[in-house]
Length: 321
Image (cartoon, rainbow, N blue to C red; front, side, top):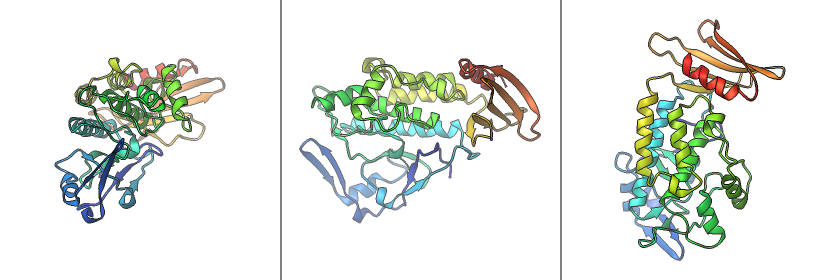
């Protein structure tokens, strides 16, 4: 079964059919609590009908962890998961719910390897007049800055575009292997970090990711909500365009770093092109960006670079080999 997991990031696989009699959905929204019947839950988690799982299943879940060295990890798999996650959020938004806590650990894989958005423990109802909602909880690393601002001031400032930011931050995390905000920050410090423009662009931390995908993630994570995608379905559409545009090229993924190297990637054969690895190798205060044939270890291309230029030189290597 294909999965796409980076480092400590995980998806969860839960069994089918679910133990409906042991599950109950509780979505807190201020003083309102919505409880649904087990039969409805059993219906809603059927893998081929729904894109979100609105309840906690962690106590029955199997945590799937796969290091970045797994050979089947590739961007095509991640494209499918991103798009499914967008569809799940769009369905929740149409039902009047903000998720408020989209993050890698809340993306679930069904028994048929379908990605679904889960864990609606912090979900709140969208006001039909203001189209806003209060944030009652979030993960600092993926929470939208305006939603966190509202939570700290006890104001309803979260909106659909706040969830769009969170899914953008989640995709950043999956593609880069690190969250956009350093771990351990409080909500206020994380918000200040984002608003100050301190998030390192995805293209800098994940040079193997295509330009189109980097632009999509950057737009989803715009600091100003007005500059983001207006809905999860708009984000879904642009990811579809990115998938079409980038699928024609080599699909790179990170591998376990070789001794003495700073970071390493590899790709599968593409048509007549052989499988390659690309390594960033420190040499004193400088670096060497080296591409080699995996089958023979023969040098394919090499380029000296500096710490300031290594990101751009890596991107050029990924594009041109």
